[in-house]
Length: 110
Length: 112
Image 1 (cartoon, each protein chain N blue to C red):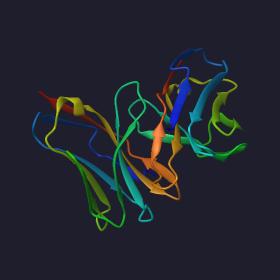
Image 2 (cartoon, rainbow over the protein chains, first blue to last red; image 1 turned 180 degrees about the horizontal axis):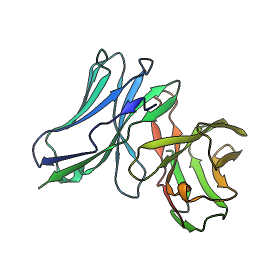
Image 3 (cartoon, each protein chain N blue to C red; image 1 turned 90 degrees about the vertical axis):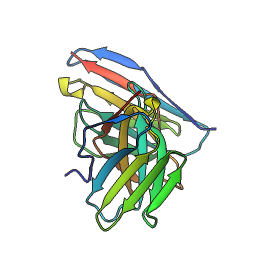
Image 4 (tube, chains in turn green, blue; image 1 turned 180 degrees about the vertical axis):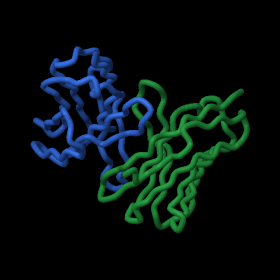
């Protein structure tokens, strides 16, 4: 049972535009959500997170939105840059364990 | 500052051969440690986690095992590799207050 889903395997965006990456979850007990960025042949690196008691967290060009009623999480990148091209994973925490989505490949074209 | 390192970075092994991947963490004591696998076209799957020396929890039944002989050392092993064991293996430690995971560089395993 996939508790965390990223239904879009890939996303292509023009440089300077907004990138919106989506994530859905089923377990209402998740209390913390995170986004990771991964380049090929490297380990994922932490990007941004949000507690379940908040609905928005912003860090520079990155903003994460949480809609608990819809069990939906999104990551907005504005403006998108070619260096943002990578695989993005959302993750949700329950009792200290993180469950990851399948990942979305973001490609930002110059 | 905390660092995490895993090796080898790349490994090509025949079916039926043994496996040993090592992971060490520096700069933190008694970390929670994790082994994840990223198989082709799939997300990150949690394989094992450890809350202390000798304490291993397995998340999925499989051909692999894990051990934690020292506080900062986490080892992923197999006695006989299968083709389906191919993938990108990631070791991680968890920051206690936020639950944020910090990953190692990853180990690419190809079983032929």
